[in-house]
Image (cartoon, rainbow, N blue to C red; front, side):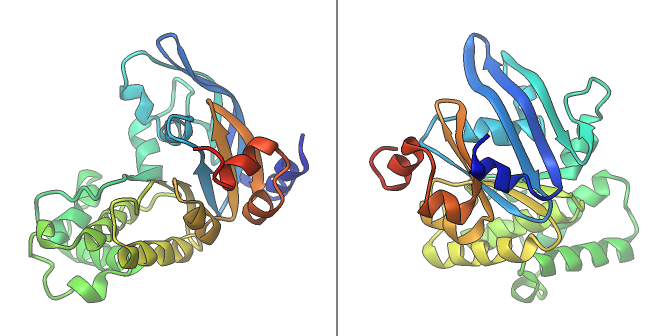
Length: 261
């Protein structure tokens, strides 16, 4: 075990992947993944296109189950339960592990109804309670001041950056412990990207965040730990500063320095 991996495992982990292999029919997409991710941290998954980082992200809330030919071997533990146990309630899992996608995907309804959607699905109907959840979630997503006077307006009229923060508020409304982000700022302008990054740093005080990013600069700015994926394997994992300033593997240094990818 490398020093970098040891360092990443020093504190208590909330997410543990053990001997994880993922297949799509005959294609071996992830190979013997072993990662421990700490609570209330941001873990960045980096690597070239097709290296397996988004596939791994989607194993964490079992979204890959929806893909034809998908098969997983090994274990993933989140908060001390094995999410691939046959007894796992996948609906509950996806409530506990929220997902923010690459492009903002607000529902074609009001700003208020976007945030209230999840709580309503889970049985909350009292307006006072929903009002409180909506305000709290929008505040956590640093969006309340922007939209508090137009909650009944369509979410489709918001800017791209606002829509992405709304989607984050929608995730927060169901109170997950873990938030997965698949390149959440790649479709946004630099100012909106900066706001999303500031938000990520604030949210890690209450949530554990795993983010896929193609941007080395973004990974360096927002993450505590970084995992470098290549050809379906984790080449190196550890403290972000160590990974970027003194990587142990030549392939990591080559990727970070722009020699490939």
